[in-house]
Amino acid sequence: MDEWIDYYDSTHTIYVSKLHRDRHFAVIARDIVGYISSPDAVVLDYACGEALSAGRVADACGLLYLAEPAPGVRGRLIARFAPNTRIRVRSLEDVKKMAENSIDLVVMNSVAQYMTSEELDAAFANIKRILKPSGRFVLGDILRPEVGMVRDVLALLQFAWKNGFFKDALIGLISTALSDYRELRTRVGLQRYSEDEIEEKLAKVGFSASRAMQNIGHNPWRMTFVARHALTAAEAAVKVNR
Image (cartoon, rainbow, N blue to C red; front, top):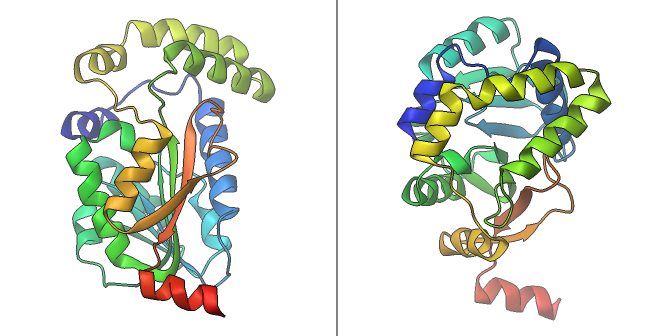
């Protein structure tokens, strides 16, 4: 994951325009808000990136943790949201030290593809530890093995057409093809998982998960999962007998 952290901590060109960047984060914030079940909820956005619309998420909950591994991005988050008392910025190392059963909702969106399988397993285990028994873990934007880059391009163009930056998207796609991002994606690669593989990974650390009807963000060909603490056999028996 380190090479991808360095990339996103640099002056990259992953967004084709300011409008693209702003709309990207606005849509993600809207979708995250849809998973917040209480105005007092404690929410953790795991590896949140620039999180430009995090204020909207904070308005819908009691406390929002923005956890970000890239130090430069983290510094910008601290500066941007310093006046907002509902937002706290943390590193991923800080997340490892969070108290057990302290978070109502954890969101990890468009992150799994940049982690090794082992890194993802470790993150899942820690998220399970800090999530309240009644909490939810939302894992978004999972790349599927059978869906390639062409679908990503189509999703971007559809999003661009709908939001008024289609011309910029066409130009940006050409720039991306010649950029460090394309070279890094080719060399390091992105992790892809089937629906069964993700559910098995989550089950291994004690989650019960199912695929959501809609993905977080603009790409309908990627997957989002909602996970909860799995019931023990005794708990399941009690629930059945009620």
